[in-house]
Length: 304
Ligand SMILES: Cc1ncc(COP(=O)(O)O)c(C=O)c1O
Image 1: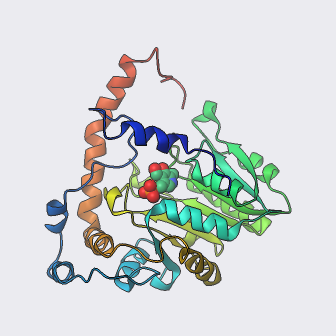
Image 2: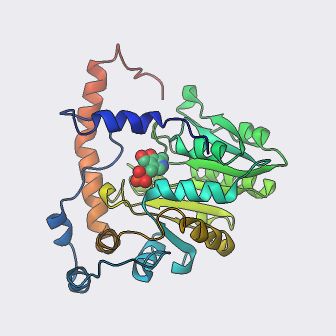
Image 3: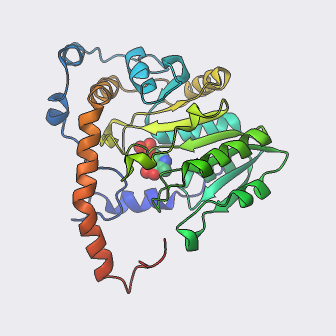
């Protein structure tokens, strides 16, 4: 498999734990273990205390999958497959869905694995630029024009890393329509979902809109637990889930038991967890604005 260096992750590997201030972090300031345990109810506290440190169920524990399914409107726990981070989910899913002869359209700029794993799996990839001059808008006509008969997958990521772009619901439904007309899967990377500044602008999860959509979620961002390395996909395509589960037998087989138990605690307490994350972001946003104003000769603060 021919994968280029993941430059962003190499950059973090070099600087993340060395510098006093990290301006490029994409996750919310993490919980400490004692802070998280303080949010647990009696039942989860008992599960944590008695936790067996053996292998876990390869699809993810049923309690955890059940709690994840509660983040969606139309999903039950059998529609959820848990991975060691969103990154593993992307790797497995793209390898299962794509192969030589397939074509994928990936919105761009993008977290690199979304296009590089697709390429390494043998697919031809069209990068669809978000329009910088229009606040990083997604151009539905350009998406339609990029689709070909062999297009098997469309990949979006909203709220978007790295621009924060968030289309309106009509545009997002337009993406779903393009995928439907093309008979293509839609991978919707929703790892920043639930962090919207205006909850009323939150997009529906793709899995709730389209039978061939795959919603990607993770504990790292909105739930402030990146070190747990727990992510998931949810889709109504059970055969796709079955094939992803079979591929996962060659990557991690199953997830870490403590990470699953702690994810369950955080998801059960999600109102508090998400309120904390949004509060941290709201508190820090003025500092970021001030910093970029002060350095406006270095950063472009006018567009986007
Ligand atoms: C858009 C996007 N997708 C997926 C991931 C992978 O998430 P994780 O590292 O928690 O597996 C990231 C991480 O930064 C991301 O920004």
